[in-house]
Amino acid sequence: MKTMVAGGTGLVGSALVRHLESQGQEVLSVNSKVVDLLDRKATFEFVADHKPSTIIDAAARVGGIGANNTYPVDFLSLNIQIQTNLMDAAHAAKIPNFLFLGSSCIYPRDCAQPIKEEYLLTGPLEATNSAYAVAKIAGIELIKSYRKQYGYKWISAMPTNMYGPNDNFDLENSHVFPALIRKFAEAKATGSPVTLWGSGSPMREFLHVDDLAKACLVLLEKYDAPEHINVGTGIDVTIKELATTIAAATGFEGEIIWDSTKPDGTPRKVMDVSRIKALGWQPEISLAAGVASTVKWYHENKMGK
Image (tube, rainbow, N blue to C red; front, side, top):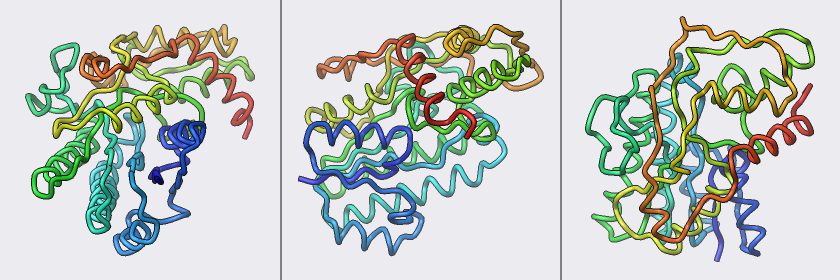
């Protein structure tokens, strides 16, 4: 039994690899240096050659509000190519188990809260990341289509905002969590104030990647339905509260300036996770503990590099 993790060196993929290996499972970790998933022929050949029993698709072009807003073609076209190539290759090789990982941004901008799975496609998407959201919605539909047409027991999961070790801390295209860690850590070192986008009022939910990795294994064992399933904590905080928590963890005591000319994005986003909790999974890492461990990892692995 071999599990292939696409995007195996990224934030989510590396957590999956760690967790699978800790359980003694054989893992095939894949990134663009191993095989370019944008290369359809190479993807088909790679999957056929290695023939894993399970594929977890954690590979994607990702980024924060700024990157999504600036490069919508990349976020739509490249993500559709990656996931379609991988699923089609899995079908050609008759891989029995496939878990597609999407994002909570698939839901409407002004969605009722907490967000239930059935709220998909009930309203307009958030404009700043609609291209990425449409790509992930296409992935959900392709999983459902493969189940319907070929009888596979493939599944989709939609995680909330993720954080943890091996995140992308590049300020040009990172998500809010790692961007805040880097900004506060660097500002503490220089004594300068920190300017943050928006008002700080939007509410977001955050899940540690180690908790997601455990959730994925529960889903592969216990979940078998065409509908996607939410993975999160069911608890949200304001971006301002998150910033305060991260600032304290880095030791930053300077001024925080909120630039209200920048977009806030979706006002609130917290998911209903009753379906996955009914399968016996619960998140174990609190936000405070997760922030502290991630800040520590950043200082040890990324600070000044």
